[in-house]
Length: 293
Image (cartoon, rainbow, N blue to C red; front, side):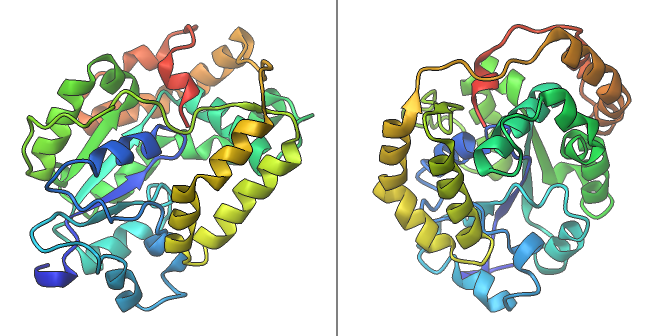
């Protein structure tokens, strides 16, 4: 794809893996358009709602010569997204970020409470008893669909825990993949984004998240960005935040989910040609990745 209609890269997921933090640093690169929008959700939720010209127009503010792209975490697990992306951008570079699946599932549980989709009285064990809540972290299922339509060299997968151990090396590999200056260091690259918090009035947080989701899933991504950039929501969250310990991931829950995810992790390891055996440890201390969504 060439000219003003070009899209160079597409982030495909996964959610609750630090995608917001990674994307905010990605677009700091001087060769990457910082007008790119996150969570367009076009190839998942909006493909039948808007013409393709609507999607192309989302990048009209990007100057010539800069890389254009977006990151929508809904793409990775969407059954039709790979074919839709290939139809329009068969040469696009694809970027994914994944995280140890037990922690990812626990983070999704906390986020579901924030969204109001799950009652705060629901235990984590009750949450993961519904296998639908485990499917997002079965990464091999999703990666297989993408690799069935795209060559392996077009897909760059960031393993969050490994990336956090050496962020400068991680960004170097990422920028090399995108074909831009790999020596660039994003300012404040270690600053956290979307940290999990506890709230005094959960209904306020539910309302914020549901409003963002409602607008984003209906194509009002630019409006959402303006609201986020205004920091009104962040001010409300800071006022509503409370220093109170939330639910914890217990060794029992972790052991049950390690057993569940082990064969899926093995398949992903084979697909990527990368050792992921650390994910199968029976217990882990809470690390920096656990506080990112």
